[in-house]
Image (cartoon, rainbow, N blue to C red; front, side, top):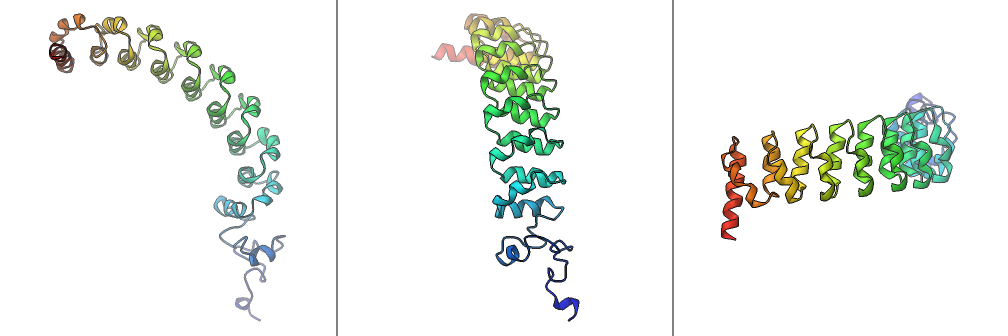
Length: 253
């Protein structure tokens, strides 16, 4: 019998020889639970490994200690949650990222200091609110910005002086209007513009004097009418037009 007369697995090749010696052959192939070259746990292809474990999730736990990091990471997606706790300290960050997305939230506190940013980002997204303060001083601003999006309003002031503009922008968008004065003198006009858009009338009147025209423009909608007439001569046409339009609305209302 020639080689061409053998089935791929019988010839010891499968696709790239992976069926040879495989404990799943021939039962899984016959039951269409794996397909050489398409769904294969022994392949060095994340796509094929994922297809195999998606079809056979009960096999995932067997591969949580596999030498190949991608096989461990994919197995962690399908294995029972109570079997992946030990992978919180896996040497590969991709494995730990999967774990951080699946663990019960009460188990995440031990991953707050993970060296990988993406792991900490997953933790920050899911961590219970009372524990979020532990990430306020994270070295990565994306983590701190995520924390700022989730912190209770009463704790947002802790990030009002953050060194990163993007974090302060999130804080400005979430602080209660009565607390926005904390960011009214922020060095970044993008932050001050957000403050002006949400400011109470008194603070908005102050921001009508801001050196940046788009901050003044944002303040026009909230400032008391009596503070607007001087800005009909503002050097920026958009500010002048916004003031004139608002004054006109007030006379026709």
